[in-house]
Image 1 (tube, rainbow, N blue to C red):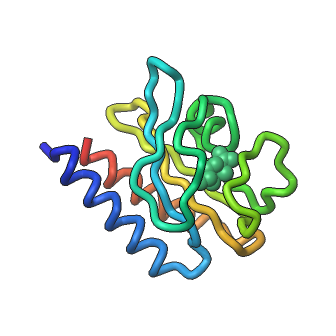
Image 2 (cartoon, protein in one colour):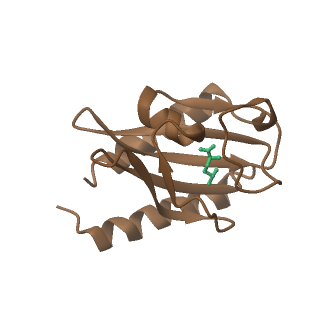
Length: 137
Ligand code: SME
């Protein structure tokens, strides 16, 4: 069993590793779901600080993934109506849900300053990462 402190350290390390290894991963963070209040809560992240530490289910790309239980790849954030802007430098985003025992417990969220950088390989790679993260819960 992983303690909450140890888990957050590992999540922080994952954010650091991803953001330093892949040049178009400019902001890397985790949000975790509270299913009672139907809100997402910011966890460990690397990148510019964000005001959006709590996101209601359904709001923005992250909130939509909390409800859809599927990956959301956004090649161009300016084309999205239901989008929460964290920084004007962000051009694209990918969000991949984390499933623990079949429940969508949160997500990894990556912002890029590059337009349309995310491929199906990013999806498969991040699904692998989220499966590893799920083992911490
Ligand atoms: N852009 C996200 C909000 C989180 S920030 O990217 C860190 C969204 O639309 O849900």
